[in-house]
Image 1 (cartoon, rainbow, N blue to C red):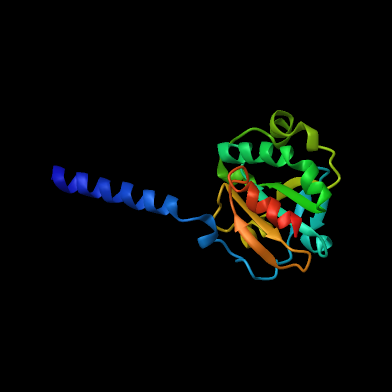
Image 2: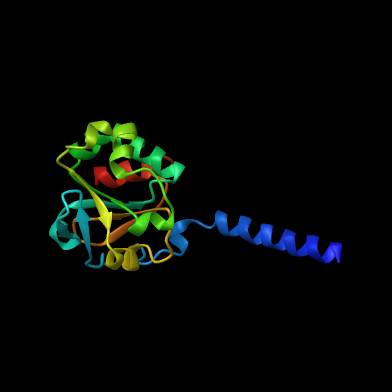
Length: 176
């Protein structure tokens, strides 16, 4: 009985470990190369905005949960690169996951104050909340941290996560 329990426990641990090694983009929908689907989100000013309004611009659509440590680091990293991203005309749409991914965490305002106080009024940043509709399209698996780099032609060029760890990829996209 003990061996079977340990074996089952090991298999569960092993399976979860493997799942964590698979990049988020492997399971993400939509995928790189696809046209970015239309969806709406809510701005901090409680206005409903559509992604289609940003067609013709380079966009980083980032959905994250405020309780996620890599998301907090990513917010700080993007704030540090704010000038470069603005100079390269990248629109950042930074959205709290729908219902914060189901877990409590700090408010978006608290995160901005702590990690990115310099971008609260940056003209190339749009900060808000994912709607259920947008989450169903761009984050159906409820990843705590997923972003899409969308070209001016409206096609998804990259799907990734953890901006602080993938900043070179984001800046390469920005310079195109």
